[in-house]
Image (cartoon, rainbow, N blue to C red):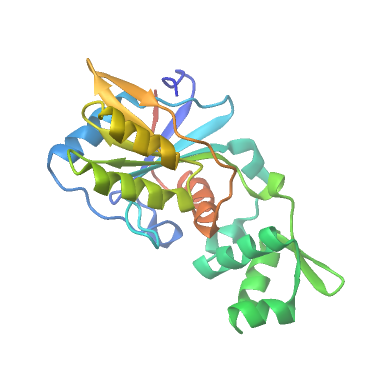
Length: 248
């Protein structure tokens, strides 16, 4: 990861953002050494962001597995220019169905109802209205990923002062939706701890003389789960709803 180029855009979304029902719920930040660690990391913000992308930084967003400390979504703005406004009203169950279709390629309505229940019929309609799925004869199939998924990277960061095993477990949990998952600690961990992180594909960020030292995480293809789709949508929605924007 590198420092952000001066021309790129960074948006911050947290419990103070005017995001309403269109984004995630948040846990309010709590004072303490871990908050100070996260604030220090945000000030440096080592990221590699391609030209034409936006970085949206979520602070303690609520998802099924808990509240990750930071989730950074780097997304291609141009892809979203043709997205329909109906996408803003998609719900969690809709993303579950959408990911299922991308994983399986296609499914009939009867198969979808067998898997997801009768409420999936409403999900099919919302996804169709949003131009994210299409009907091919008697099958429902997803639109091309290149046109419906804008996130290039989803990076999760878990911060802890001490409690190495706990933070490593939390970072591992984040791999169900993130393309890269990191632990953030004040000092470089021991060699056995680094080996444990590497074995799990988890990256490590630590501070040295006021700068972030990074041991890179393994990278996975997106989307990894329906939660990847949710962060993809939330980043786009947040760009239209009063979040803080800055240039790094």
